Amino acid sequence: MAKPDESIDPRILESARKEFLSKPFDQVSLREICAQANVTTGAFYKRYKNKEELFDAVVAPTLALVAKYSDQRESISYDRLSAKELQLIWELTPDTQRETIDMLYDNYDGFRLLLCHAEGTRHANFIHDFVNDVTARSYRFIEETHRRGIIDDVIDEEELHMLLTAYWSTMFEPIVHGLPREKAIQHSNIVAKLFDWTAVLGF
Image (tube, rainbow, N blue to C red; front, side, top):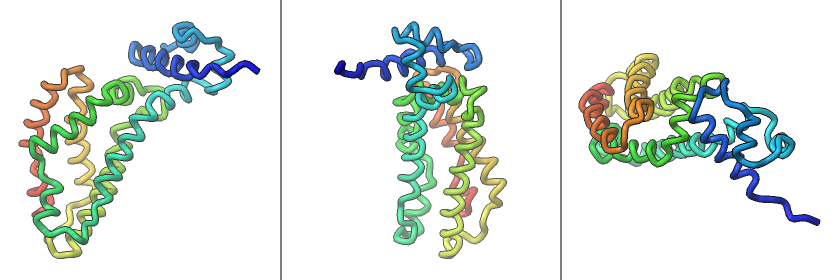
């Protein structure tokens, strides 16, 4: 029995990544992806139902990274932290901003696809969906700090969502504009001056 060609999947995904990055989603041709990957359309359809499923597969590692990033931040045991330690979680410093930029730029193509080439896919509202999740997670943190008497008032959840949308939208802008990493880092440090989260939350 012939051994399955294990190079087919990586070739399809690499070809798809290049094609999805090069043009709008609705203009991407599966036939061209297969030709560039040197695979038959039959081999393709054994693996993917359609172009939408292929796009999902290409961005899956980036989405998994986003989920891991969010999970790590929420895995902190808030009840074991002091008031100062809780405040530090929301302080934007050059180090915390650099961490975010590195996360984005280490996965540049995936975020570029989600931010600029997802129209026509189920990820077209990536920023909105991402911020919805961040808001829900953040609100649990805020409610806990209020319960402990560390902050006096709880910000309105809709207001928090709008502010987080503004923050993350501007943090994603260097990817949208194709800026190099170093310019993105400079940009992120300016963003940190605009968003004083500890003041917003009432620490």
